[in-house]
Image (cartoon, rainbow, N blue to C red; front, side, top):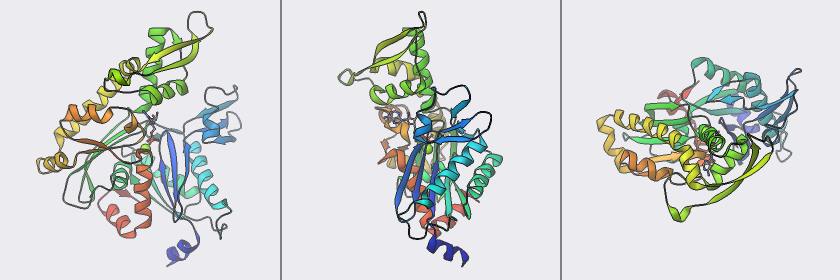
Length: 351
Ligand code: ADP
Ligand code: MG
C-alpha cells in the first residue's frame, strides 16, 4: 500500500550501472541519462568535483591534487564512495528536474543492472549505495538477464536463449531458460582491454605513447575484426614520441587495429566456445535456431557478429540499439511487477 502511494508521486528508476557508461531510465519518461561512469574528486578532501562526461573530459588531464577515475572497474565496485556519489547524483538529478509535478518526494524504487560476476559483498555494496542515495527499495538484476529482456528474447519459455553483453570492463555470456540463468560466464576482459591492446601495439610498432581516450576513439571509428579490404579505413592519432618525448602523429589503418585487438577478441571467443560446449543438450537446438544475441557497446565493433558466428557455428545477431539493451531490460522489470516477481524467484534478481 505504502509502495503504491509512493509510486504515485515518485519517478521510479532503472539504472544500468556499467563500467563504462551509466544509463538511467525514468518510469513514464524513458531514458533520461546516458553518461560515462566517471567521477572526478579532490584527492585529499575527497570532495566530488565532477560526474559523468564532465569528469571524463578530465581523465589524463588532471592536476596532481585531482583524480578522475571510474568507480566501477572490471565489473566490480572498485571505489564505493565514488559509486555512491554517482548513484546519488543521478537519482537527485532526476528528482530535481523541474518538469516533474511533485519534485520533492525523492524516494524512488530502483532496479539496478549489475554484472553477474560480482560477489555477495559487492552486491550488498551496490544495494547500500542505491539505498543511501535515496532509493526506498533497491532491486538488483543480473546484466545478462536484463540484456535478454531488453533484446526481447522469450526468456519465460522452456527454450534456450543465449546472450552476450560486451561492455567496457566485462563480457557477460549467458544462457537463459524459463526465466532463470542456466549457464553464465562473466569475463573481466572487454572493450577496455581492446583499448589497452591498441596502446601497446602503437607503442611497440610506432613508438608512440597514446592516451586511453585516443585509443578508444580509434577503435570506435576505424576498428573492425573481420578482414575486408574494401572496408579499410585510416585515422590519424596523436601522442608522444617515446624517443624524442615530443608530440607526434601517426596514421593507423583498420588492419593495424584488427591486429592489435585480435588477441583480446580471441580470448573472448575462447570463453564463448567454452560456454557453448556447456549448454545442456536439450537447449542447444533452441540456441541454434534463435541464434546468439549480442548487446553492449562492444557489439558495435564491426564484424564481431561474423567472427563469433564462424567460431561457434551458430547464427549471431546484434540487438537493436545495443548500448541501451540492459537499461531497457531493467526498465521492463521496473514497470512490471509480475516480471519483477518472476525474475526474483528464478534468481535473476537479487534482493
Ligand atoms: P559497460 O556496460 O561496461 O558500461 P557499454 O555497454 O556502455 O559498457 O559499452 C562500452 C564499451 O563499448 C566501451 O569499451 C566502448 O569503447 C565500446 N564501444 C562503443 N562503441 C563501439 C564501437 N563502435 N566499436 C567498438 N567498441 C565500441
Ligand atoms: Mg553494460
